[in-house]
Image (cartoon, one colour):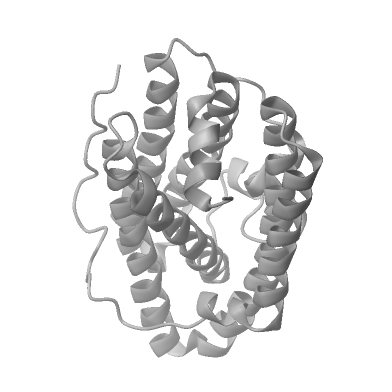
Length: 262
């Protein structure tokens, strides 16, 4: 029977597919860490109070990248090149979502509009990250090799999502509500298409590595497209709603250290 657990178990059990999975994850987290670090350094004077939280967000992303690197080292694996068609962050940037790396490399202060762009982008992508980690915790939370890692990352992603809700609501009360809702809708519609494309690309690579039969690959691709269809019809709305989180000031403290895997 084809299930999420059996699918991921097959990827985890094979060194080559596990290496690709961790390399893609580590690369994405490292990019997120760099982006948040630059945003923290470039915040406008009017929003400098966000700096510790943005820095904490970046530190968490860096930590997640180190965790995936450590999981590979534990098996004696080294990172592999990430196929361009699986680079979620870069593909979102190409669609004009979030702040560009070119902007972040400049030593010019960001505007309040830029910060709203960053938070709207983060609210949408952290929704996806939180959901993915909940799924991994469900299936691998007690796994001897992966359990500690997925539980820690899942908790961090939930904190990131709570932080985005809280800060966007604060900015909405300050008069930016319409801009925030427009940005959230634009981000969500772009994200669901990028997520579909990246998922199809990742599954194609995994299929080649694991030599899946054609029928299995076809069924998985159909499932990915079905999820996109649901999200296109209305599932995207979960990514744009804002509500005050139970976890208030979720990024108000220092980042926790990565557990030792090596």
